[in-house]
Amino acid sequence: MEEKKEDPREIRKKKLEEIRARGIDPYPNDFPVDLELKAFAARFSAPEFLKITDQELTGEVFSLAGRVIAIRKFGKAAFFHLQDQEGKVQGYIERERVPSLNWEIFRGLDLGDLVGIKGRPFRTRTGELSIRVDELKLLAKSLRPLPEKWHGLKEVEIRYRQRYLDLIANPKVREIFRRRSEVLNRIRGFLTERGFLEVETPILQPKAGGAAAEPFQTYHQALGQKLFLRIAPELYLKRLVVGGIERVFELGRNFRNEGISTRHNPEFTMLEFYQAYATYRDLMVLLEDLFSGLAQEICGGKKIVYQGNEIDFTPPFRKYTFAQAIREIGQAGESDLASPETIRAFLKTRGVETDPKLSRPELEQDILEKLVEDKFIQPTFIYDYPVEVSPLARRKPDNPALVERFELFIGGFEVSNAFSELNDPEDQRERFQAQARAWGGEVDEDYLLALEHGMPPTAGCGIGIDRLLMILSDSPSIREVILFPLLKPLDSKTAPEGAE
Image (tube, rainbow, N blue to C red; front, side, top):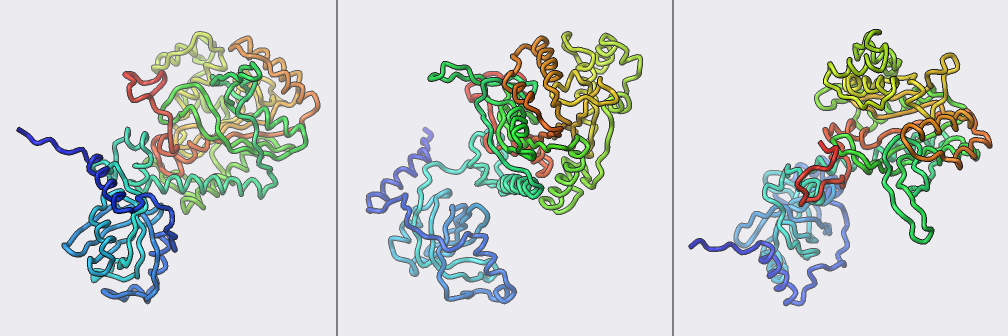
């Protein structure tokens, strides 16, 4: 009869009980650390230290800490590796060198345990920087083992659901999120240096506005009021422009109750900024400066590789009008665009089914979204959109059927949307009413009241930070750049509607 293996968690729990029985706290918080492991390694990477092997590099004692990720035992001595958020170092422990209780604690260590060590640095005969341990202290007992093959953990379900294991196992993942933080900091610096003020606007809003998207709803008990998680901060930021904050931005979360895919997460990070006395063409130049600068500062050059394609962020970026893009890139001829019926037929021949409620401009936008945008690998501006698909944008003076709007595509998908803002309250009311008739919803009277007090001519822009991070980190999915992406429940039999 096959002997039943003991649960690894139960084995570790017994070790925990034994530790406590010795009067040792397995979760103390009294071990001061001198250096992070990366800084420790950097300190002893100078040429004069590299030549010294098989002896101590200095008489100075250091206190280090990290997670045990490898152990090699040799009877009365052992090598082991510690890892922290940015570095890794090898420890060497000898039974005769440390207190007996320290040795017993070490013998009971498991991979994943967190320990603190004190000792002197030295290089082994093979030249590896190590620390000879004089003292070892358990800082946190890990009750669950790391998953099998955790070095280079690749199982997507584990990686996204238990992101902490992903971060332990995959240095590249930690680097992505360090890069994310750096990108956010550099964007803030770029805008504040140009006189923009960072603000925070409501996430709970009485009306969902600023974009055409399905909102999440909630209810405030004390006020007896239905509220929405914001789909965009746009209308609040433009209220601030009315109030005299003429360069303003917000970096924050938006929420849209829509499909999940490699490019969509219901909760995502957006940058929106507004500049008075500017046009959408001014913002094209600003984005070229921002994106080329980020590529240079984050990736080391204006040319980067995304999913096997070289992308060149050297300004100026390519530009097509909306009409040029659907004709030249989408290969839609004049006869294909003659009427809504001919556009539907054109799309159907290319495998695209359309909503029968869509107007002609919306069908033309389908051509752009379904047949064109994935061809824009290099940074490309598409500009001058039909007014019907841009309810918040200013009309072009020489062609009122179009608006002063652009979208920026990189890597085959949209990264940014911008326009010269509509500041005529009467025109805005008419467009809000048309939108409400077509798709439902309410007219935002409070926003119209703000516009009636006068908003200066303004240009505004939104940038999808998660999509930008995908490109700057060469990540194929938005889930790679969001620490905790929304996933279907583990007991769900089918994927959520719209999931890929």
